[in-house]
Image (cartoon, rainbow, N blue to C red):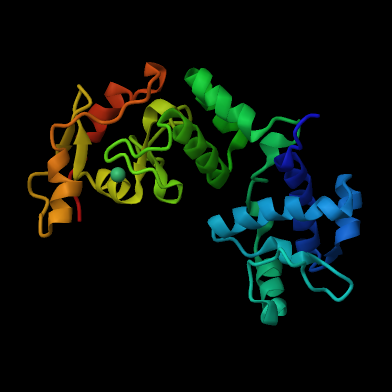
Length: 263
Ligand SMILES: [Zn+2]
């Protein structure tokens, strides 16, 4: 049995929901299920994908527009205070949804998130094509991070921390400055814990051409932990992925070394 592509369903549901929002309307589970061709009992799995996306990207709670006969969203809806549903709906109605790309549109023709991650890892040179399929920044970031989690085996490239929830996808050439081919290029990425990501972005941690860490010597070391998580890594090699196809690009690292440390 082939795996259900929830993003494909979410792409269709997104289109329906933004139309409902434009009409300042409300839709029932069965109606939405019929429109996207699935049983109403499995609609909630699709809504979970959309709800998570809205939460992660600070968007109004679009899934507030689906529910029961009384206009109340189902049990899985957690994106807004249930005692104040009308205010949540107003937020959704007033938002300009048509200004956004459908974040799941890459899946409309049946391609899955997993397919895109595989392309990013097996054919990094195709990262521009993948980005052009995804386009929505929030979704591109989610898929890029999942590819880096695989490449770095879910460990911070600096300290080895393995808690999934604090591991982030860092860009070597920042998102705002990189070209389309670099936005999802695993060689322009590093999997870092939140602390090391921040220190890397602010230029306090750099990486030399042999993949050794350079810690800003002026970075204050007040506690032992400060020292353990920064100065002690100076001159140590980062944890490189097993496959050298995924190693950070040396030109990108050289460009990052130009970053002036900021507080
Ligand atoms: Zn770390």
